[in-house]
Image 1 (tube, rainbow, N blue to C red):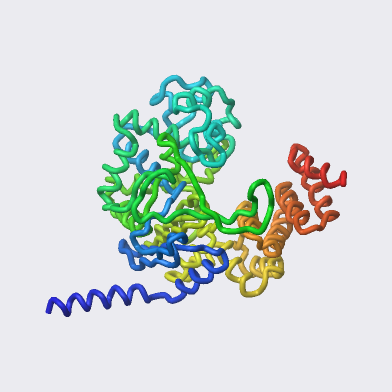
Image 2 (cartoon, rainbow, N blue to C red):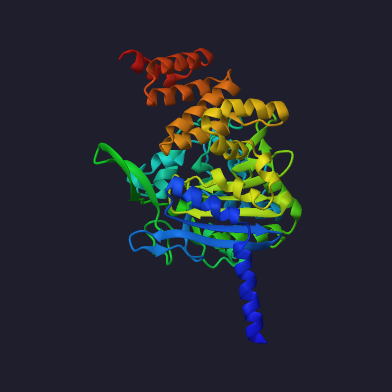
Length: 478
């Protein structure tokens, strides 16, 4: 009888792995197109992991395949764990989101003191970027030698903009959040994460570390490079080396598996990490700029799709791994890869569509991508016109289109990128930035005269576009 139940359990697990063949089709297609060596996928539905699957090679040097315990760097996905740590302190009434940070941190410059905890969480603080003080190639501590020296230098730098007026993704925000967590818990933030998140969610393969650390079952990271020894050549796959000094690891220091992150999401949603559901709702809501408009980020979470249906929140890290949660659909998708530049968030909503087809159409970018793959990217404007006529709520966003086009351009999909930049000009003719981007791809494709025209339009719309002026001067001088 026991053998029967074991066989039954095994058959049920295999059945779960074999559901939704469309998932395999999407993953295999994207791995081939993006040249991703190895990938790990987990799908959570209704509080359970319904799919956990590994693809490809984790370690190219030794031809080691990915399995469900292969550990991947998750880079900026670490910030969602930091967001939970902060919101845990909010729930305990140890922090108020609108408190100025000088309530928790001493010896701050005068123009830093009224920045709020919420403004750190959502990247609208205007603080100077700590990364400019670290080695730009490796991320190591660089010439300043110590955290204390970096901290003193950082405080001498001016704000990038008036606090609360703009969004700027910035590692300094999460560096300071780490200091606040440590001040209030009287422990290293790594201990706080371990106690209040890792142990509770049973994360057995989630660890802090970087390229310097020996991490069992670790998948090294790769990227395609075309510059070697000061010369440009054919792009080839290379190893990456990255250091995350311990004091900035609240922003980008964790390594994990898709199953661990899936279990963490389950714990987050079933009330084991927070005592009140309202805390989770607050974390997954935007803050506001000074003028009252909502921020681009939720609290610790950078992928925010606050649409009429199929709301989604998530995060991406290192341009190689991403998490997307659909609270209303009781669904979450986690994709980890070992290729910097793979941008899995591009295709994750299509995976979600294998479990709820309505999700694909709810996201204009995913719907556009899926259809243009079939119809041809040169049909982009025609397709959008037709879709908007049939569905006035179909509204691709300028920044999302621009980011997608740049990712394609970096992956040598220049014709496809060209059509999306062109579409953005069609949709947003009053935006100086779309003309600037369109000019860039035109120049890259050798259409100098058209590029000049686009840069001139960009500068007409924004006379402060100094980069555009510089490029225009360079190309008109030739």
